[in-house]
Length: 299
Picture 1: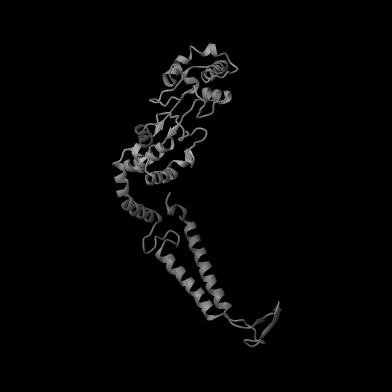
Picture 2: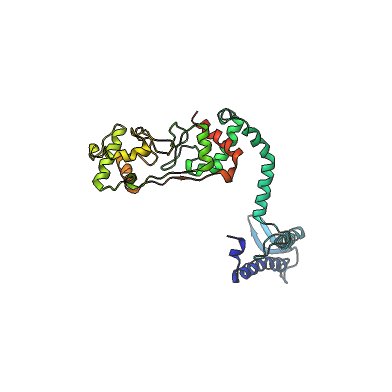
C-alpha cells in the first residue's frame, strides 16, 4: 500500500483544507487577540480582576511571544511544502520514509558489513564463545526471531524452545544454520496419514503416552501395529527423526502439549509448523552470527 492510497479523490482535498484551516485559523486568532479591545480601560490599567494577589492588567501580548508563534506558522508552511504534507503532494525535496529507511539501512550496512565479514571466517562453534559476537547475534534474534521463540528464546506452544537440548531438526551448528537459512516446513497429517475413528485416536493416544511412561484412556495394544506408519517420521522406538523434523515422543518435551487432550487434538487435526527462511532477509554472514547466538543458548 502506498501513501497515495489514503489521499485519493475528495480525501486529498479534505486533508489540504483541514491543514489550511488550522494554520490560517491560528494566524487570524493571533492577529485578532494581539490587543484587548477595551475602550474604557487604558493600556496598562487594571481590568478589575484579581486572584490570590495577582491582578490582571490591560496589556497587549508580548512581541516576542507573538513573533514566535508567527515564526512557527511560517515554518509549518515551509515544512509542508518541502516535505509531503499537502495531501498527496510529494514535496519539493522528494523525501519519502521508504527512501529514508533505505538510506539508513545502507549506512548501517556500510558500517557493520566489515564486522560480519570478519565473524563469517570464524566457525559457529568458536564464535558462540565470543561475548561481543553473541551480543550482536542476540540483537538479530530480537529483531527477527523473538516474535515466535520469545525474547528469552524459550518458545511457546507451537514454537520450539531453543535453550534446551531437544531439537526437531538437530542442534549442530550446521543444522542451525540450515534451519535459519532455508526455513522449515513441517507437516503432520490428521491421523498420521491413517483413517482413524474416535476410538482409534484414543487408542493411538494411549500408545503414544506409553512411550513416555504414561497411560491413556484408550487401548494402547490395539494401536501398536498402526504406529508402524507413524514410525516413518518418529522412528520405530518413537525417539524422532531429525532429518524429517519428527519429534521425539519418549521424553517430556512437547511442542504442542503432551497431555492426553493435546495429543488427541494433534492426531485429530494434524499439525502444520512453518519457520520462514531468512536467506534473503539477513544474508549468509548475519545468519552465521545469529546461528552462533542460538548455538550458545544450549551450550
